[in-house]
Length: 322
Image (cartoon, rainbow, N blue to C red):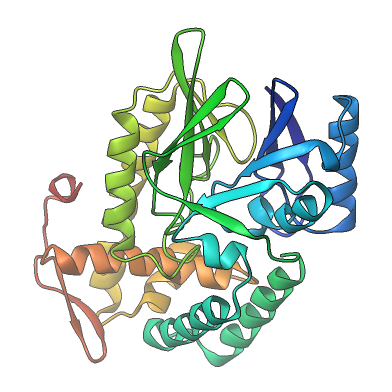
């Protein structure tokens, strides 16, 4: 396995593309954004391994976000590679216009529900449209589900559906030297916590869904996790524990924000947690706030009125919510 690091000016730091070789076949896990300098970096990385885009026979995508999937269509055009993505994310990788339209309509509904002001709404829509500019051409996708095994040469990747950051995010497990490892995309990351809800507004029960994924991923007892950004995670279980602790503390902060401003909508909570936001973070801030508000409402800590959320259980046991 080799790692090609690709620059990423549009989103959250360098992207990793993993290159796998077996019996003359070449597979990629993720692809990077569809901008000329990133494609050039990928081509240079493959050339250093004595390959080019035409050699790629399989692409396994962890999720639909452009920094992970945007070059899949161009690579497929060059090589005829089979592109795999979870069935929940496949329409967005294919750039299906109905799926894109439904996503945008849902975003606009939530901007209203969250209380995002008009100027910020216009700014984040512009940022989202710029994201489409780096999304590239759609690929023809072979949909996959949890538990399936992707084979090429003598290698096998087992699909582990890990929703939360997106509805169809998948990890790909494999064994090496008797140890279980996985490509985890943005399910867990080494330096920051993956955004929940804002990153994919299609996820039902966003925080609860992500918490369930983290516990299921912890049960896999991975020796190493290979993330979509930055360095390998050598102690995945410890990192999962840290992310869960982060969300417990964030839950406490959300409760205090509602207490201070009730009735409070997601934008009011986001302002207290994150301050002024710009660009795509205008989606991520209130999105993550909403994920926690939704979780607290479902557990009877908050009630949602026509004017916003109010506390009904002023001193909840936060640990019990996880």
